[in-house]
Image (cartoon, rainbow, N blue to C red; front, side, top):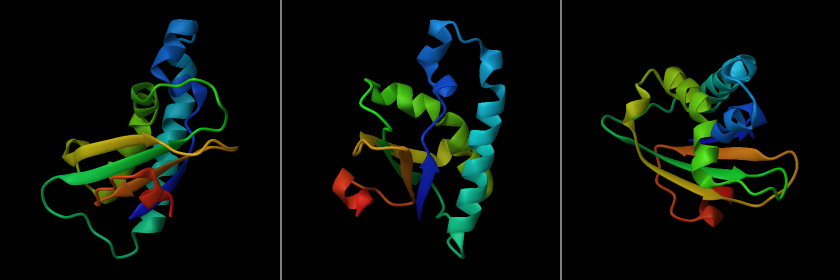
Length: 128
């Protein structure tokens, strides 16, 4: 299953807290990210159901601009979206293993493309 999620709000990046943003600034964006991912997953599922055991994830971040962002920070920014995906699937997010993260093409409005249940080894495969 392939999901196309919105690029995370800037307040969800772990380093945002270091630049003067408090945890309270991210309450609404966290809830929105989780809710969006939940409904987009339900919509994409159809009759697809997760396998038993671990569920591989491949996450490609298509940034909206050329700002320097590190992959681990982007992974932290989608934590609540991953929670929404897990909730929609009716599983614990600890089953998401392995997790492959990569950067894709840059362009507005940006996106996060998540392949659930398949292991993607190149960016070209997931963007095809």
